[in-house]
Image (cartoon, rainbow, N blue to C red; front, side, top):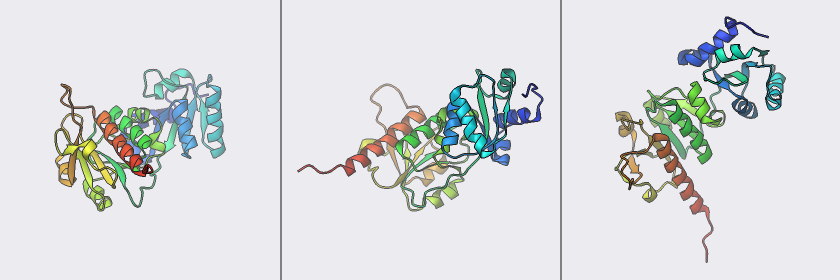
Length: 263
């Protein structure tokens, strides 16, 4: 059992939680809680190191057994040591450092999310979670978007990171990848209302910054705009909420197009 906060592996876990540059350099990030670690195992991700407390639940023990088959190093720690490595106020009973996989991007994209300069980790995580639920093929993160593998983003994503291809790319690379796909920018009072916009055809949805909206680079890349009418007195929607409304409008339109025509 690890009982010291100064244990090198515990210090490494804490550094991974706090340092985006280290996460990128080591291609490793940390997830907490039985549910997220279980999702990672089910999706086939590999662990570099796992710690758990003595009172780990039966469900958590099954997760450990799955990673043990992979040969992952697993250590029991005291509750206080796990708490010291945790990024949450009330730490869980299980914490895992996972190898960062770049899930393959689709060769023929037709439904992509571009989160432009989204700086709130909770917002980005919620957008990724919704994107996975809506059947989005990939999420692209231009410069100045927050780290997709930050602790708060991972928690808000609820396992989306393990099944949705996510890439941090420069705008030049984004436009090159999507050269045959129209980019539609969600903008307040610009373009057609979203219900009057054709979202059945291939497209990439750009959702801009929570406060300032889309960046100049996003506007330059976009081939058109759409908006969500707001009959109330609010000036705008939360970025994650707006993204969810628009992504599921695409789902609605595409499902309607597949329905049989009644005679």
